Image 1 (cartoon, rainbow, N blue to C red):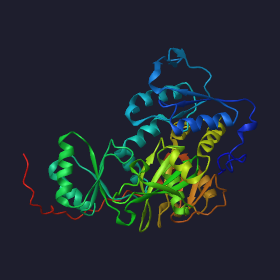
Image 2: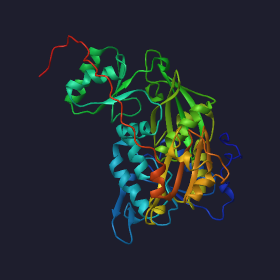
Image 3: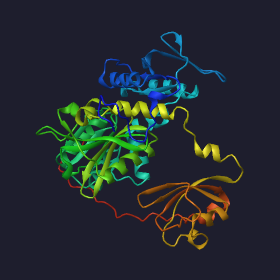
Image 4: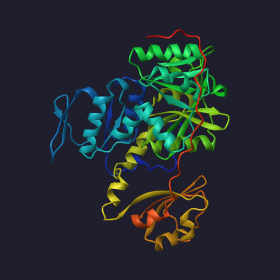
Length: 420
């Protein structure tokens, strides 16, 4: 990663200064004077491309079966090669509609409308990350008053963190020191029709967290954010300060995987330093640049533009849609557990090929191996993404285990007066 103002470029990214023709890159932003927008525009110009800041709310969307179009300030949008979304949370709905229309027009974006929508929905994001085994603080979501105390018990009891689903930049995050306060706060928020998450408080990370800035398949910069005295929220917007760090491999791998699970090519991944390693708090689809560039001195905006320029000719492909066109063929992901049926029929990638199954990617320990060779052995614990005959794949998938019944949780005792 180059320092700002340097002539060097991000390692492994194509040098776009020498591309055949300059690119027209749009920046979806309502704040052209904001630091992040200005830095992206500067990075686009520095690489010989043409930037265009587009006010997200000044679009008109024309829907047509064969010729979808966008108009910005009354003029038809033409000759845009890519668009970088900087969509504020307050205009998420319309911003996603605009971004979706760009996608219909085959304009490349590093963060698709579906990925941005999923990351903005904190409940859905937590569900998706948990499903894929990403470590997070224990979290629960309830609506009924009678479910509040059992939920607090399930996340480990007080103190707990209460989060508004609609909150940003630390706003709407409350640390409740005891059960009575927690129950009262949650009931109050419910009464005003707010949705909240109830989350375990990670004591060892009190007042600090890590933000890793992911571009493509790697972390291009990382910082530790430390809260001001007396504050447990580490957001810079809440008065905290940031410092550059050398990110441990486990944190970098978690950050990249989390961004990829959410479908984001540009993301800020916030993590706590738990006793057993990284714990993901949030995956931000529109992370600010001022804090990370100020703390690290790195040209993060340049890394984003370099990535976008290198990816324009390689738009995203929905593998499941593209490869599932043949009858009885499809894509599947298999985890090779001890005693799995697959080991009765296959010891190597080549053995799977003989069964009419092509391995697209093999995950072994912390190594990702795209298109592995036929001689590559298969091991318990490996995870393979493959394309092949669905009938054969079904015989290799282990039977689904029944979920173990958890012990019943008794309600916590409280002397709060009942409310009607």
